[in-house]
Image (cartoon, rainbow over all chains, first blue to last red; front, side, top):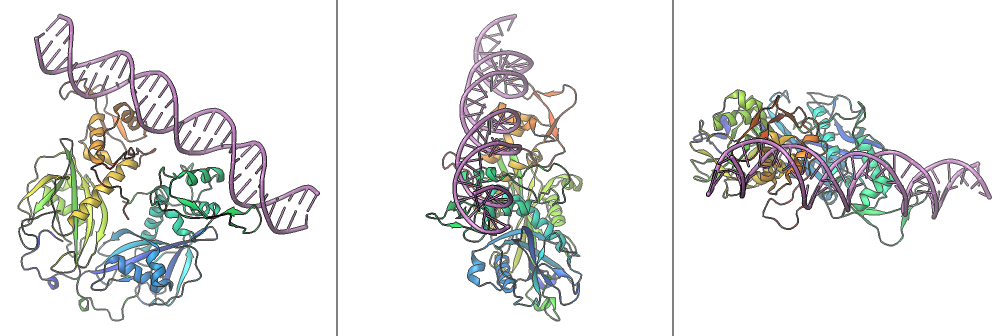
Length: 254
Length: 254
DNA sequence: CCCTTTATAGTCAGAGTGACTATTAAGAAG
DNA sequence: CTTCTTAATAGTCACTCTGACTATAAAGGG
């Protein structure tokens, strides 16, 4: 709180709240959106998959806790984790969301380039990537959190430069377009996508000289790296849905 | 948390976290953005102004707590409060944000039409509207919360129908335009604003028949009420800042 | 050497927008 | 009862952006 402090407030007089972070960690693999999940080793929801997460330490902010959990779960070094995009999504406070006790959870979303399999370094013995569409019913309210996270990521691609967070340091415009197509579940016109990305100031910058990537067949593509802008002007709007597609429902954050 | 549950976890073994809500309640009065503040009656920050807020009850969600606090602070009936726009902003978790103890606070933003002076019904003896630009240094980290809330509101006006939440049930397009101009701190061209609002499906609907409002001088304006849409297609984008204006800094929410 | 594949360049019509001008309908001033 | 002022509403026009295309370039595979 902050404002009306009960006289002689004693922290232990109230039933304590536990505070945790939950992470929706995304990557794009093989043209599919994937999310990092851990298998629960104990009740409740033993054997079910869940978003990685954990308790806040006594003198730790939620952002720090999220970064720490992410490092434990992915096995990435703190340097790598410090650099990646981590965004606070929303806080979940339903009194019954955890059957054991009162837990409020601050949810974060993180975006990674395609990485080798995670090594469950911490408490979670088994952590692995799941196709986000195939992620079965998760523990707790994590299905809701995951759906909210997907909505938010999709919306943010429109008006921020976030998409480059899914790409390695150097990438082609085709790879960047793949990110948009995968997250939005639509196909985009290649020349138009290219025109928009290149005309948005600070979105991408060409890699020096004439280096190119030759993946397989086809003309080699020029390489780019992320620019210094964070916002996208003008925004890159999703094509309006023509019908009820199987993708995420339209959603604003409440 | 949710996932790695410490074996034999005892809630009381951890230093308990207090969980509160803080509310940034906005209205537009006399072409200025106003925010509802309460004066603190005790330490810390005694005599400073702060955002209204309070502790979550043991079996209450943050959204319910926000609605309850808002009803207490504004003196509005639960029916009115139940209908208004309340949006979760972000959660503040810095370990030192409250000098007394560990408090995490879930911040909400609420938008109201211009109302009579609030009656400090609850713990807060004195609650009143402040010009949002003149709101001095607030208690705790509430300056940060207020700034974040203004950023979010301004951004949401672009791509949602939120602006009608600042207006009474029936309003003129001039009043709606005033909301945009006040929140964004810019002037908009009247015919162009009108064209955009009327062409956005579901944003506003004309009030039946030929009723009109005659405020003072000038041709009476037609009345509208909020439509059923929540999203704005196409968005109503802020004009790009030409220079460093005195208004809020450009900002996305992280 | 031709075919397929992918990247890149360019074209064109329509929608949307910003900057204007014009007209209408009220109250206020004389 | 004019005339002025104010505000709402209608309409115009050039410019930009966008979606839908077509065309060309540069690689690998048969």
